[in-house]
Image 1 (cartoon, rainbow, N blue to C red):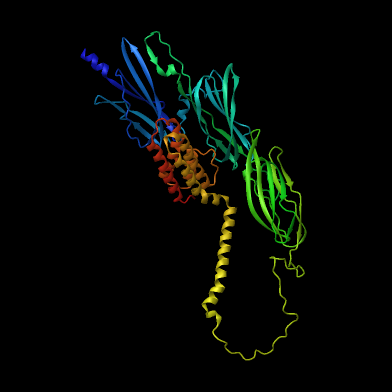
Image 2 (image 1 turned 180 degrees about the horizontal axis):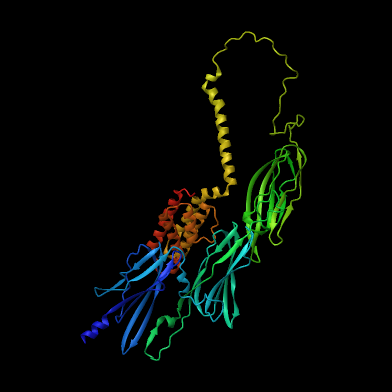
Length: 588
């Protein structure tokens, strides 16, 4: 009898991994099962694992009745994210009950530097081929595999699922190194029959613009969903009763797409216009002036509006030729992005200021803009209409001398009406007092304007250089913008807004790095961030710290119910620290 009681009180702890080999950009699912006949099973205690980040994914319960003995079990699930490559043990997971510690078994997890080939087979019934009675699979397709550089490639991710699923599937975006990436959005789910099975399709589309020639690779995309599990039947009516099956929580499923290789062609050299700036697509240009009647030196603002289909962000300023009648200054530029039929396009506006030098009926000539049409394999030229401007002379203007008028109200007092004779002898000279060059007021009066002029020229040149170098301007303003985003995140740093908080932190970190490195923030993953920073000789420890915080944001949704206020405060502090540290590193 005593033996039976002791056996009934025993607690077992089982530790399992869904896979034993993963890559640095992948995760493993750790399950800890606590079983026994006690009424309240204790929660497992996890040791400190410095080589991994651990996030809770919840728990499930199971109750079984056999020979009148009731046994219950709890299964705790954790997401394991590696910090570095290697082979590491996960050990010393235990529970404490009635002052007695029960220890689980040890498991080993191997982390590879790159994606694990073994990961393609785990928990995935979908990667062999389309259809063929598969419950779910993920397919990646592109509309063209041999684009020109800067020509749009439309990438479509198609998630086919033929079984019931719960919640929203979680997508890990594909890596798109070598592309400027814009998300086109998700298509409304629809149904399609394939190999005599009816699938529900969920689509997500991207516009990819290759930034270099040669072979480029679009990496794997991975999608995770909770699908309905197949309930196992038991002949014993008093057998296993699974709460997961009763409430329909299902099991986690994972599907990955295959990598795609794209061969990017250079833009043809034949018939290339001399002022071609690399724009690809189909565009038109229009010029509008804010005024048609002005005085000399009164500015006329002309907006050059370029619109069409293509990478509108890469459209360069139209080339303006020098004009004797006008001084020309660049004012500003703006852009708006739009899409139609999965094609990205929009409008880009360049503002130029024309200041007339002389009066008369002046003409701002037609401005040409060249682009390459990839559909027709030819260069096209569009141009604006000439703009006529009537310029009048203000009061006090005199154009007889041929010297352009420079400022209103300025008159020239002609004191000499004839040529003075040359004096043949110097005559007697005598001192009239102290020389003015030894007077401090004289020195300051003459040198201060010179210093001011030099300072003005230097400041202006610096501003012009920053305006021309958008990458440098983005890098200089990156920290300021990130500071504002972190301030917004700080206002959300509470358990009631945990989702919004982590979204804001993620945006702050990715946008900051994109501005700092002059790259697109879209499609940035921990893998691409790690690669970009490594190429710029960033210390490995700093890379791990930066990507570690981003990973916390990526997977906060898995553990939102288990997060505490201290977790939120720690994430905010880490975010501020890594940005400060990146600011102190010179990114080559």
